[in-house]
Image 1: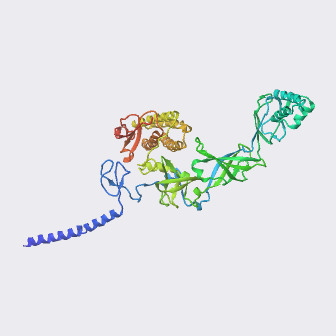
Image 2: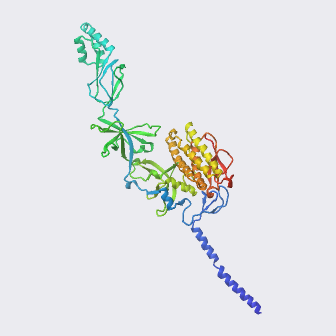
Image 3: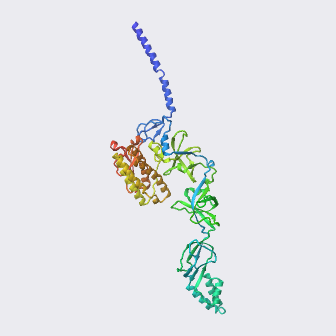
Length: 567
């Protein structure tokens, strides 16, 4: 009996201990469940980190099980990333807070231009009869002439003959007045005055050389003949410019046209008179766009009675700008914007006190001075990166975050380019392939040498061969990062660091090949395991996959994602 009592006591003690140890577990589990729910845990794919879902499940791309995303210790959202203070300092990252243009005093557009002759006041001195210039009284360009001044003396066989006709007709003026009048009118058509004609008739002497007088006053801007030249009737002798007024011609870019109108005030400054400001008004806006420069000409007329302005003198103009007549507008510095295809992006700093950054896609309006109007995507008071934007974007790419090139909606635009530009890009592509092959060999020194050769090939690509402003801008964006990432490879002997930069180089080179084309078919290949499972692309001339990010370690890891054929 005592034995059973002991067993019962032991059992009761065990139950009590069990209740004490595990009795609150269900409540604790409920508490933990609530905590998980409140953290808004996101789920991602280890092979496709761009996938972010609020619940666990399968990856919609590869079908693998989703894993918890590292929102983490620092409370960053999936699209945010953080830089160290050292990286911020090395990249010289600068930011600014954007706001309404009401509080922005620099709401002006600055233009560059030149002084030109006022074509409305210019004149061309011509010869009204054919002959040979016996004497030219104008010695040099820039000489001032007055109306009625003797410019040249001309020997004209036609005038000699016409004088003989006049003397003959003068003897018959009583009997044939019509003939006499016709001969005199003929001489008048050659700009001989009544006094000259009367003098010939009264002296009864034929003049061999006739004077040519200035019909306007001004400055000789161009000599078109020399002494001894034979000239035809109506042939220009001199170009004479009236410089009492001059034109200030400015070029306005296509995206700034809406900011200008005739009659708008413009302030003009010159290097010759740096302390003086000249006020004028826009008198003409060219209705035709220059297809090469994608600009229009804007003109202002300047009073030049003091002869301060000289043709071909460089000038600067400033115009107060209000986009579409708006009273206020949200402006962002041009240096804060990156363009890729049809998208415009910028990087913002959500937390002023911490070096945390996030990419924002924005829609831009017209350019206002050194700023752009923001139509959507940002709000007043946001802090944006204005210096070191490319470095920020490269950091986002390396961390597998949303960036300029790492965007699922990105579509590269194709441009029609000349054969010469395509051939220059082909040379750079061949050097890129050599660089890729050296990464397959995992040889840092050979990769470094290949990067030097690629750098030269990229620098030899002539951007002026691109026909459109849009293609020009796209190449500028791509080439800047191509040169930067390739230069980092050339200045490193660490194969891991070189491969990080090769990922950025490859992404931009892929866009370059897609946008502008080369002279052969290229294969866009992808390895999901590269860059710490963030994935990376590269280009190859062969369909066979040879992985430049792992070399012999995982030589055949990857697949062909696209065949690029825009020869």
